[in-house]
Amino acid sequence: MTDNPWSGDACSLVDAFRSGDHDPVSELRATLAAIDDSTLNAFSFLDPDGALAAAEHAEVTLPFGGVPLAVKELDQVAGWPDTEASVPLRDRVASHTLTHIERLRDTGGAVPFGLTTASEFGGVNLTRTVLNGVTHNPWQHGRTPGGSSGGSAAAVAGGIVTLATGGDGGGSIRIPAGFCGLVGLKTTYGRIPRGPQFEVGALTVTIGGLTRSVRDTARWLDVANGYDRHDPHSLPRVDGWEAGLGSHLDDLRGMRVAIIDDFAGAVVSPATAALVRTAAEAAVADLGLRLVDVDAAIPNVGTAWSLANLAGMYAALGDAWPSCADDMTPEMAMAMRWGDAKGYNRDSRIILERRRTALFEAMANLFDQTDLVITSSNPDVAFAADGPLPGVFGGVQDTPANNGRLTIPSNLYGNPAISIPVGQSDGLPVGMQVLAPHHREALLLDVAWVCERERPWPLVASSPG
Image (cartoon, rainbow, N blue to C red; front, side):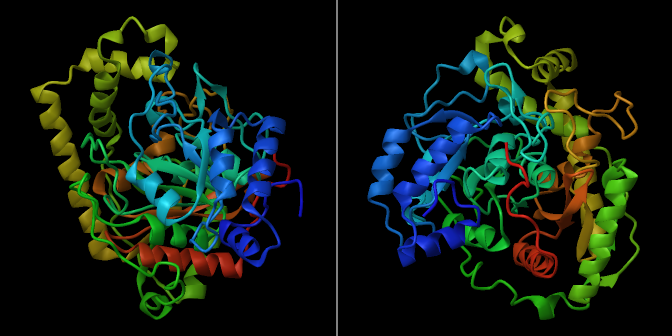
């Protein structure tokens, strides 16, 4: 027994519960104590009494039986705050629990105990809000864990909890995973249902988790994936994700792969590009992949993505906008003002759909030429925790969309992509992103599984905050 939270992955924690070497109540108490001692500011709400009652009756034979589960602030749990990390909504309480969380809790046996900090409305890739303050990267205090699932990534990489939920509408799982040295899978759109109270919105958001290992991510899919009638876009259930790890290596051998340093026009730092390319070439050799050159021209869709996601903010804020502008984080208030100036009307909708279509054609053309794409998860290592959002590498601040260019195309197109830890630069993690066509998550998991086996990564930060 130890007074510290479990430092391995969630699957090994379940094994310890089942063997009697550890118990869910002790683990939850250690987790809550670690939050009290932490300087990461990774949590915005805790429900210790409810969680301890659940831990006392945890069924450890279930896939995540007894494992404490941190829930991203933008996810709903009935009776818990539902703030969108925004001051204007700070008094709102969730009336329902997401199907995703219910499955992790009821089918998986996990114990939800609190909400992790997120960026306001999930709109930027750092976690700093007026409501909650600044969240830090456990690898280096003063650096961001990314966003919008920054609190989840900080908590998992910081040794506080083995599992935390995340959402990826523009890279919000992959970006924090890359910055914090975690596994971050963005699934095919609809793989995990988003109901109840499903809002179609921009058709960009997938939900999932931040984990320390590939098998944790595979087990998560086993528990959470599958159609739910509250989300008409959700996909049929697929079984055998964890059991199937390593079973697609023969399929991968000989597959085409393109390594693209500047995917979607992103400007990647030389150090990050070199580290990712070295890891990519090693993976190509390990898996027997076949390198190909491709026409990888991807249109800039940052404006289209922003327009597509503004409607949800307008709906949530309602009449509170624009008088609430001073209570919002600068980036989100600026986005709203930009939306006011642009006007979300017939013409802007036509432009949006034409840009989406151009992206769809470009991505289809890309996957006609290759089976997999390898690039970076982020253009550089984690930047300052309190911002500003970085522009093009080298200090130019006029193109803040650079940090999302690598990830946003897969959100608009809906294909799966995964961030895999591949090393460090200046003591900060670097993630390698692998993209596949729709419905090919199993290939991505096997690529990550081989990378993990051949070049294991630290499961928690070397000096968690």
